[in-house]
Each structure stands twice: as C-alpha cells, then as structure tokens.
Amino acid sequence: MAQKNSMGRVGKRNDRQQAIFRRRRIVVGVAAVAAVALVVFCVYSLSVGFAAVNREIHHAEIYAVSRKAVPTPSAVRKSKVAKCNSSDVALTLTPAASSFGVGGTLDFTTGVRYDGANKAGCLIDMSATNVVLTIRSGGSVVWKSNLCPVDADYRLIAKGDKVEGSITWPGVRSGSGCTEDQSTLPKVEKGVYSAQISLAKDAKAKSEPVGITVE
Image (cartoon, rainbow, N blue to C red):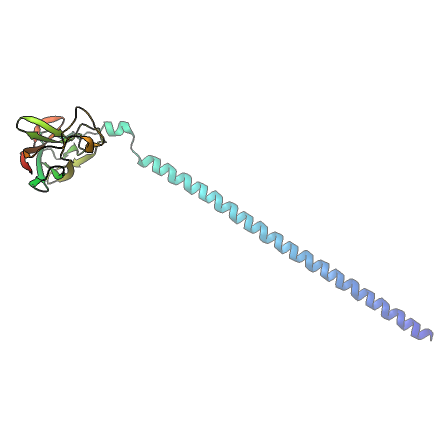
C-alpha cells in the first residue's frame, strides 16, 4: 500500500514538471516570435528611412540641375545674336482666300525668310506686335494687328530658314486703341482692300501688298 502511494506521488510530480516544461516552452516560443517581429519591424523601418533620405537627396540633385538649366534674364539680354532688320529678312503674306462676305473673317499666313549674310543669323519676334498686318482702303488704314499687346515670340533664324505665323482679320475697322472683343467693332463695307505685313521696329521690312475683296 505504501508503495502504491509512493508511485502515485511520483506520477503527480512528473505531471507537474511536464506542465511546467510546457509553459516554459510556450513562454520561450512567444518571446522568440516577439523577437523576430521586433527585428522585422526594425529592418522595415530602416529601409523606409533610407528610401526617404535617398528620395530627398535625389530630389535636391534634380532641383539643383534644373536651376542650372534655366538661363537668367541677364544671360538672355547679353546674347550676341542681333535682332532681325530689313536687310536680314524677306516677308511674305498669303491670304486663305481672295474674298469673303461682309461680317466674315479672313486668315493670313505670314512668312519670314532669312536673307542675311551673318552666319549666326538673327532673332525675329513673330508675334502680332512685331509682324504687323495692316489692312488699308485707298490710303486709309482700316485695321492693324498690333493694337492689343501680346507676348513676344522670338525665333532664331539663319541661312535657309523660314518661319511662318498666322493672323486673322476679323473683318472690322480698328478702334483708336485696343479692343479685346473685336466683334463689337463696326464691320467693314463691301469693297476692295489691300493687306500687307511689316516689322513694327523696321518699316522698311514689308511684304508685297495683297488685294482682298469684301463682298
């Protein structure tokens, strides 16, 4: 009987030890998982941090390069290329049609060809402020394209170059100054008109006049 009791106590002690061992293994396992998770989190955080720093450095480099690529206004003003004058260019004017009805409009194609001798060419402002379309009736000016200011449009032209632009005559008479909404201006009457372009800063540079009929 005493022997059975002794064996029972030994069995219970073994069960308790196994339970303790299981709990220890669980604790160790949880700690290991937590340690692995901590390592993964640290590695991920470092990767994100390095990527962010690299992006900032790359952005700063691009910004620095882009700033260097933009010429300063003083550099533009110091350009050694001269602006075109009458001895450098030949002007042409081509209407989309030879006639149109009262109340209509007419498109023109303007052309500037380089005829100069300078190998460096010259700068031509192709805006309607400089390449001016003038419509006349007899000796009177009916309409001009440069009454309203526009931004300059400089082009570099040299031997063999020809640049083209477009100007639309809205079929009206110009006012005394700039009228943004030209539809409010009086329409021209039926008759024969002449169209011609010239350079605002050099009146000697001009195209041959073109006859236009308003029907």
